[in-house]
Image (cartoon, rainbow, N blue to C red; front, top):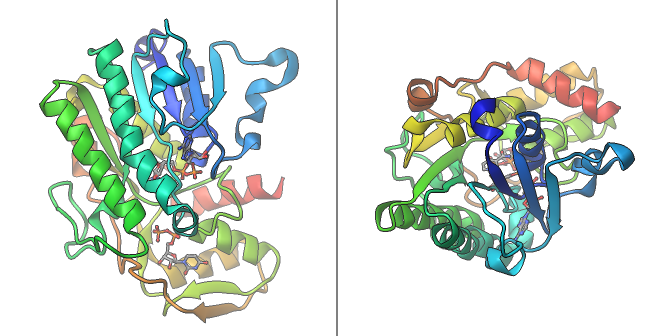
Length: 326
Ligand code: NAD
Ligand code: UDP
């Protein structure tokens, strides 16, 4: 992989976010030249602080604090030549995207359009990787979800600013791939967790870890029999890099996630046990349009990318908890 990435100048939007910051670290390890962009709407300076650590400031890395919804020509140098874009910028936690619905639909729609348009104008041979989501399947009526499934999404509900804008983002990718012959790849990312998730961002894993650590009630929404399948962040980043690197992934849409499926009750119990917590498990209202189950079919990722997750849920939780406590 290094052979490919060391020759690339890579733009990563959402570079100070949970996934983006891990992706940037790995790209720099592979000796790519990286330009990170983030406006910190949900990201955190501490996620990238190690890249600015005094004398050891990392070479080949530049960071721009700016809104990636704007046309890139407005924030990049005129002579910048970008080979590859990973477009990860977008609030991702349901409470956060519901707090910023307009910003969320704009970065996934207009932001995606501007980034693709810029690449098309400045380097039509460049590659574009879009961070889509399992949310494009909505509350799925087929299980597990394959890439051929079109989804079951409420077009006008509390989650629509995210779900529908990820779907429109995919549409825009499709237009640039089909009509303008661009090299566009779509990652449909399923629930991912790990170190550097904002402990306060409201997603289930950080919520449960924080609550269990403080022996506070662990808040299961609904009856807790809805399911999710959790992927450790290192596995996801490996999948994204393969998607960006491999020729056979051109114009493909690929699920990236861990197919091990857990109910929310099981998730709460596992975290409580791992942390030897005295928290009570309590039940609160199920949020509107909360998908009942979610599990990726990853046959395509296995076949095309040779990718599958290596880290078990227990191992990943242990690593995440260790980092949270230090
Ligand atoms: P995150 O909120 O930690 O990171 C997103 C980053 O994007 C943040 O740093 C935020 O400040 C930045 N951002 C948002 N809008 C921006 C804008 N207009 N301009 C510049 N920066 C902006 O979320 P994450 O979990 O790291 O998710 C990264 C990407 O992966 C998102 O596109 C998300 O939709 C997708 N995804 C994540 C998951 C998951 O479980 N983590 C699942 C499916 C899809
Ligand atoms: N959830 C929960 N308690 C929490 C946070 C979330 O029971 O404190 C549930 C939520 O209702 C959903 C699942 O956990 O069914 C995953 O939620 P998350 O916000 O992490 O992401 P989603 O997969 O819904 O986008």
